[in-house]
Image (cartoon, rainbow, N blue to C red):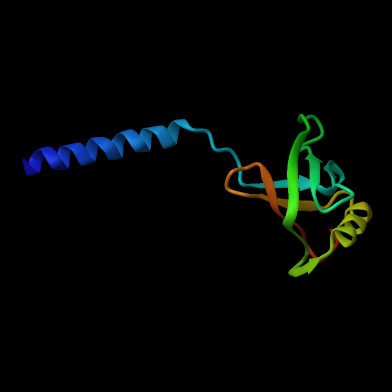
Length: 113
């Protein structure tokens, strides 16, 4: 009886592990050049990003809880927009929510590169 229980648990673990491995979850954090990011004009809306110049454009939703950061300082969307325009070749982090549908955080380093 105990052996069947262990075998059943091992089978369930194996099946669930296989399902997770087969599911392509994609990236939760993306690094893109600031010139390839278009911010919305409002706190809610979508941004468009391209991971490279030849890559297809991808749209992601920003929400009222999306944070914008320059270095370790949280800033307003308008401040980040100005920084994006002044640093077209800066690498930026786009952190997604676990469902990969919304942007949790947009961050560029404090130092210009």
